[in-house]
Length: 333
Image (cartoon, rainbow, N blue to C red; front, side):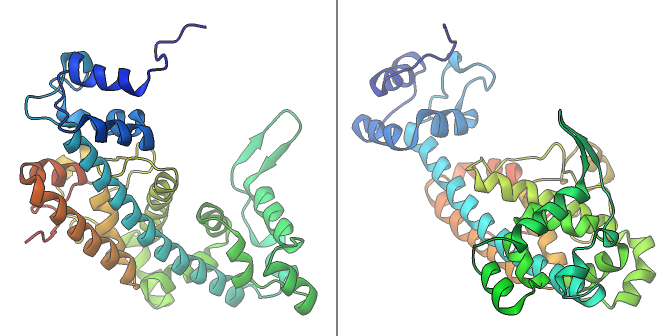
């Protein structure tokens, strides 16, 4: 079968870049090694856009000052940013899971026979396949049951030695996405308790201010956005200029303009709703400072290192990440 993307050898890839598209390659042998190790698609297709004469047409070649080494350095910067973000989101995930487990145990029970009962959960969405109809609650209860009978540790130990798997152990077997499902399908009292733990707000005050500040909607939007980035980092996706089309934050008073100084006009153009800058700044909403501090510090370190070599990229990168000084304060001095 013919394909419009046929296999090209490393030498052919170099020839296309250097001869056909006029990209400067300062060290051809090193470039060959890099393409062999990391892949043409990952480096060139992933990070070429700012260096092309026409981003919509590779065949119009690269800008006069563009180099293979510069593209590879942008790839490496994004790889560092991906690691920074993944670590910060893992910190947040751990905090979220513990707040969820604590709240389930407090509001419902730490007894697996009680907190896994379907009466404690909303049904969620209904799904169809060729064999049966099921809903989100069915999927959650199936996950509970799988972990209860798992031979993996620590589930086997708790089942055999303690005859019970409490929520703080159950949550260890869940992905971030699965734990968000657990949260979203829980009854309002549990969700409010999770939010009060995450924000360190008294539950009574939280209920009183939730309607005006739309706090529960804010947390719901942020969980979706963080999960989108968490999955992107886990699969090696490009981070620095990513925008989520599905998990965009709504105009919420807890975020705008307190944490993000965007105008309604900018917001309506889908700006400052799902970028890396939005993730970094909104992490500051939560009581645990480690996720936001970790991301901000390491972003500064890696960006400063990159900009020592490519100072001309500063405006482009800060706009791509939505970290410009007018909207989100970010110190690069």
